[in-house]
Image (cartoon, rainbow, N blue to C red; front, top):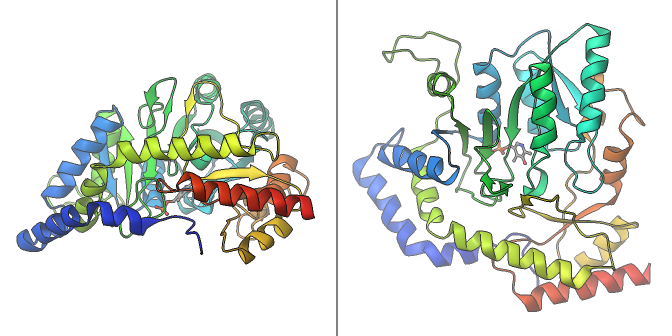
Length: 375
Ligand SMILES: *Cc1c(COP(=O)(O)O)cnc(C)c1O
């Protein structure tokens, strides 16, 4: 039997009647844009993230972009980001006219290496072409980045810290919720993320009243007091009401799903410890386990054998950002970020979702170990 990589069908079965009711309600009131569900969702998200403002937007990418625009990041600004990430983290920097500065990641946690960030800030200052303006730590695979070290460096160098929490909403760091860890945070509700809607969606989190007001304006074309009063260059980046209704329904089981994800990760860890390189958690970090990513030699051969047995895997990510054709002009080429480059050769994400049972995890682990031994 084929195992799903992410099982959205099982989740839907759990909430289907509630979903139907909420969607019917939107059809009845007809407020498809910024309907009442959007405000209800924003209040619920702000409470979960323990922060003053949650502003829903049309995607995680737009959440990142709106925050960079709100802070006036643009031409001449250097924005530091890990090279081992999803493309959106780099894309938004260029979208607003700034220049990406690629930073190495830690080989164990896959998150931004603060020591290398310090080196790249110093190097950027020495070269003098760019003003070090912002840093975008990414909570890769659901584990919060090393915010303590990064925030210290950012404070010393007056950098805006924008957390890319597209994969980590629901996680925490030293018992503080993602969304309340730095000045501004962006998350995504893409269907396969730990909290996903049935389309594109995202949210911005901040305690800063002024920044929040600017983001509310930016997501609606840069509106001022009146609808046709355009006070800044904006975006069409609102979340639609249907997606808010879907997310409200999913929130009713989110806490339970977080616990299930942690259980699945713990069971994988138990089964794979000592056999492959299992994911490493930083002290104080409570991951939401968006992905369960191992490192292994002969990754592609192992993945091929698993596929034959109906076990899907994914490679997040096959190429670091500094080597992507679109971003290579801003990087230093092959060999410049060896950890990121090596990870792209070795990482393998195993099926991960809240509805994986022990027997299925055991089957995946047995097949994995067998494949590894046969190579
Ligand atoms: C998914 C993702 C995004 C973008 O989110 P979308 O909602 O798909 O636009 C940004 N950064 C990271 C790290 C992601 O995984």
